[in-house]
Length: 167
Image 1 (tube, rainbow, N blue to C red):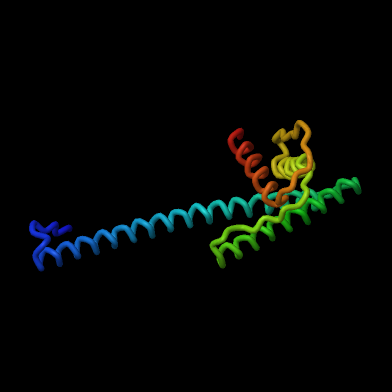
Image 2 (image 1 turned 180 degrees about the vertical axis):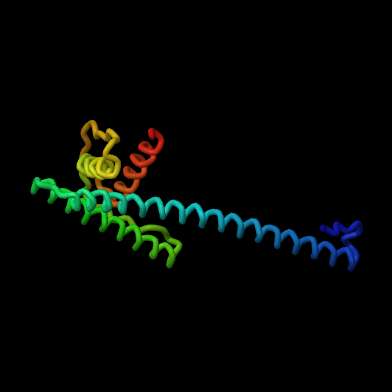
């Protein structure tokens, strides 16, 4: 409880005011700690979601390969999907380690990216993971300078959220 001295100019009043000030600081620090803890929970939840997505693509493609695929081209496409999604999961794990070490955020790797090709690959993985869903890419897109892993992450999250909302 706060002391709230009636006569803060006296020695006892100054001590009581100092005590009240310390309580304010402790409560402020406690609020900040709770906020930081909540932000950490949200971050960990987002990180788990982001890692789960490429792993689901790896699992779906690997299961399809395990069931047997007679068409050589389809086998190769599924194998490429496994490799690409495993690399993406690895990069996300690397990013988590980087963020654990520094506060400066993620480093973006800007390269020319074919947005339509990237969107098609995201749709392919979504169709593998959700065979009963209808996932289509429509329209045309050009090449932009971007981080392909981050754009893939954003598109994958959008598609995953859309699929979850339509089940």
